[in-house]
Structures are given as structure tokens and as C-alpha cells.
Length: 463
Image (cartoon, rainbow, N blue to C red; front, top):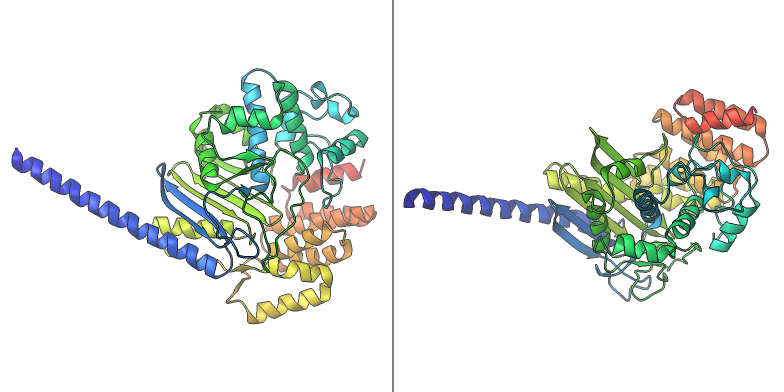
């Protein structure tokens, strides 16, 4: 008996030693990836990796201020961009579970005073961004008072609610106002009481000023601090540990039922849900990821619920490489060959394209010929589309059309080509050229018959 117990103890000790060795090896690989990402200039921020509910790697890289006078720490708060919309969506579902509202309710039931469109837009359209409420001015400060005034003046929706997808903060604003009306509390107070407290997010705050000493401040590639341009209230700002706690709390069922989680995860084809993007198998959530950005802040998390792996990244120097860094970290965890990403071409060229399109294109071609060791050219179509969108938002319609044309010629996935045509049509529509808009919406639908936005716009224009 003593021999068997000794043998078992030896086996257990060996297993423990092997486990500790594997964990240490994994941690070294994760650290090497992040150090190289920081060295390549594609990550200044905080990272956290957890497996089976335990944090296996956490680190900070770079600076908390643009003038490099303060190093980043894990305790500093970050703006998380549109990841914050998970909280307003969850608040709506909490009130639904309490029987205080229904997703089929029109917003006019709770927020009277708007035009007839408010009787057609349902709460469910707000949380999956299919309301048809237009984007008024993508470069405006979007204060609460401006959004309210624009909504009061709105007479016609872009499309019939539920037929197409258009993400904008007006949907978020209306969700917040409904939460206040139904709960009888200020939005920030309800979020703190119903979500942040129960989830143990003790360091998270709402609307803390971006220049506060407890915030990491955002800056560009020249380390010039970025002005925070979001004027609307209601944004959650948090340290990386609290963002991880949020994902654990949401997926555990502590604050929402599985049914509510599935409802909140619904996305219109080609669009995001209130929870970013999710995957379900047999009714069970198996993965969930969400990226958000604002004024050079960027936040991202990926949760493989099935394998119990979580990766969380927050940065105050946006480089649009969080997805690729996540993939490299996953490869390290799985023990497969790792590819550390290169720098974003889009971020390098967009300001040059805005200043002078011809010079910007020449610079792009020079980088492609001489600097592929530094810059990532693996998805030129997406880079051209994103640059075109950057110009479109600044009303450079002719220049944007030219970039979308280049993107379509580059080929790639049918969905990308279709999107390039759809955006071209959007530009022509803003220029007042309905004829060319119709031509390109038709091209978008021909390239991808699943492009619901193009389908709806064709139906709308032909009315």
C-alpha cells in the first residue's frame, strides 16, 4: 500500500512539473510575441491572457502619455470605443428580463415627441442597428444636445427598420434614454448598480474625462496626444482586468440568461450585433469577440468559451493590429508556428491620401515596392476600402470613388468587392447623382447577392 501511494505521489509530482514547465514555456512565447509587437511599433498598451479562468500572462508595454513621461500600468483606465455598447445593450436586456419592456415595443412608447418614424422603430432595431436612423455628420462632436436636436428634426429614415444595417451612435443614445425612462435612474447609475457592481468591476467608471490622471492618454505615431472627440455621454472606461471580468461575468450567466445573450448576439447579415461578433453551436455560445476604437484608443477581446481561453488587449496608440496580435497569441497557446504582424499600411497612408490623393498613391506604391518587410500588404483590398471610407467621411467623394475603384479591381472576396461598389454608390448618392448610385448598387448586388444593404437601397431608390 505504501509503495502504491509513493508511486502515485511520484506520478502526480511529475505531472505537476510537466504542467509548470509547459505553462512557463507558453508564458515565454506570449511575452516574446508582445515584445516583438511593441518593438515593431504595433502595440503600446496592456495585454491579458487567461485560460480556464486563470490569468496566465499579463503585461504593459509603452507609455501612458504622448510625451513619454509616464509608463503604462495595468491600473490605468482606457476608453474602449464601441465595446461600450455592450453595456447599453445588456441594460436593455436586463430591463426586458425584469418585465419592464419588450423588444417589439416602438421607441415612441417611451420617448414621445419624435416624428412618425419613432412609431416604426422598435427597441430591437436599436440594439442590432437596423433602425434606419441616418448618420447626420460623421465628423461632428455628437453631444447629447446635438443628437437630441437632430432626432427631433428627423422626418424620414434611411430605410425601413429591420431591412438594412447602419451603425451609428444615435441608436446607442436612444437605448440609453430608454434605460433611464424605464429604470427611473440616470444611465450611469443604472449601469453601475445593475452591471459594474455585480460583475466586480470595481475600478470601472463612466464618462471619466480622457485627460484624467487615472486615464491612459491616447496619442498618434508621432507621440502627439490626441484630442478626445466624442461628445456624447454614457461611455464606460476601465482597466484591462475589468474588461476581462466583464467577459467572464457576461458569459457566466450571472447577469443575463442564455436566451437574452442569444437575442443580444443577433446581427443583421454583414453587420455587428451589440456584442460585436459571436458564434453559437447547438444554442451554446462558443466564441465572442469585439473591437472598439475612438480617438486613437482601441480595445479588443476574444473569448473562446468552448476552450476557456480569453485574450484582452487595450491600447492608447491605435495600430489596427489587435486581431492579428490575438491570432499570434493563440498560435503560441496552441504550440503552433507563430506569425507576428507587421505595421498597418492604412494608418500610414490615409493622411497622405487625404492631403493629396496622387501623392498618397505614389507613396503607397513606393512602400509596396520597398518596405514589405515592415508593412503588411496581405489585404490591399481592405486597406483601399478603409482609406476610401476615411475620405468619404471627410466629404472627399471623388477621391473616395477612385480608391473604391482600385479596391474593386484588386479583387479578393466577393463580399469585399461588393462593399467597394456599395460605398461607391453611397458617394454618388451624396453627390446627388442617383443614376450612378443605381449603377453601383446593382454592381454591388451582382458581386454578392447577399448584400442586403445594396438590395434595400435599390428598392428605396426605385420607389
